[in-house]
Length: 181
Image (cartoon, rainbow, N blue to C red):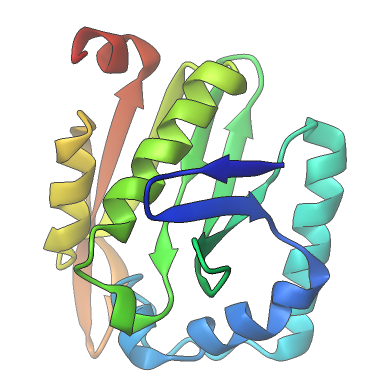
């Protein structure tokens, strides 16, 4: 399965993606946007996570993590899906452009638009939510552009670079999306 955007394609994660994900998760500049600049997972841990996503894919009948590729098939990021609640048809999403050379080029906008369409139109979800460190204003602007509401502030919920930081929670309902069209 491939989800096609204007600038990127999104495909299900596979085992051969472990090396790229490992590199991104060990890059302090990339991880600072995720509030974890000192994150240093081992390749084995990343491989274990990929296996977990593959297991979830089988149970869910849809990907648990999407790989972001340019139209030329360069792997540049990923969209891991977090907590999924079947009864409420709600799911957490994250978005990482792991290659800094692609930051600020509209890729995040294309990815989020494509993911929202898949979640609401193809996967029959009714609520998406995301967390973002208070310092990541680029992510906040992106979520708000797509109609996500700032639902909560988790005070001092993240600790890095010797300080506590707030984490913001954003939510979008399928009905919000249809009202904005």
